[in-house]
Length: 205
Image (cartoon, rainbow, N blue to C red; front, side, top):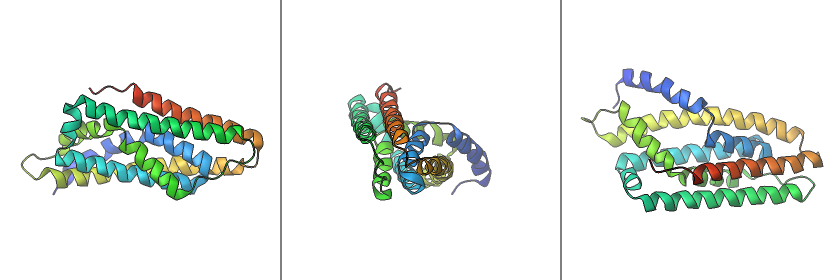
């Protein structure tokens, strides 16, 4: 479906993007600190699945609707902002309560990673801007988007997963400390609130 030379050109470009610190990496970092390696990997898997969802929507042409209708972009964006702020408040309350912060269940971390990425409409706009550079318009677009998206998603799965596992090791070793748990609650809340602010101030173009 895709010329091997095109894939050879796309893979390093995708890897460079995966290695650039961003919202997904910070989210996996926060989940690793709060819930350990399993939670981080589950969140990472949710993000990877959401990316493939964005790629599928872009390949079907639905991404053009998000780009053309500002109200749709804003609606999705503000849902994401509200969800991230809710996570920030929950993390802050957990840290302020004292004692050990309950571990994040992998299933819950997966759902959170999925929702956080799906409610970031900037991802689908990025896909629309980036992937067409490596597609052949004479061939069906959707299969090419899916193949390229799989490479991008796999790279993110590895990189963000490694960050989350490292953070999980640090977090679990210090989990018995009440002072660390208070600090962890504040740090997690700061990460989630920062991601919410970042999403809130994104523009459609």
